[in-house]
Amino acid sequence: MIADDRWLSADEQAAWRGWLDTYRLLIPVLDRQLQASRVSFTEYEVLVCLSEAPGQRLRMSEVADRTLATRSAITRTVDRLVARGWVRRVRSTQDQRGAYANLTESGAQALAELAPGHVQAVRQNLIDLLTPAELEALRTIGQRVKRRLAGRDGWSPRTSPDETDGDDTAGATDPTDPVADTAGEDEPAIAGPDR
Image (tube, rainbow, N blue to C red; front, side):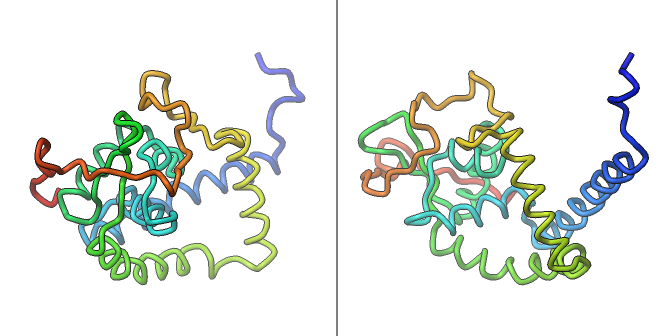
């Protein structure tokens, strides 16, 4: 049994349920908006992460950490984006075990087309409902919870020890590291239907 002082107060319970309701209502709305363009929320997140990265490329492990998704889920997501021609999978010439995802010109164009609708949905369903002080509080809360749950070094709680890519510097993208396209002579490019 939980000691009485550890139960949530009425105010704490209202805050907790308010956040939970917001999450449960908001994410499906944003996902449906993107699904209308045949893109999942995670696929969109990956495109955004890559567009913001130096050279528009990140290690696969870093994409997983930034999106707080498992590495296996990110591998499947990147596979779908590769099949659409929006992302290229590349590997380091210095570390053949380390794989990168690289945004293509076609992927950047797709993101440019998807972003206005997504931003409008985010504004309409969250941002425009809040005051500047509430937005600042939301940002601060998000950072604090992420530090607690994901750690300051970017490690994801969703990454199990058996999901490592064999790289002790997982998540550290070296912009000077030469990379080799994995769709070379020995390895065919990933192909398939859009989804």
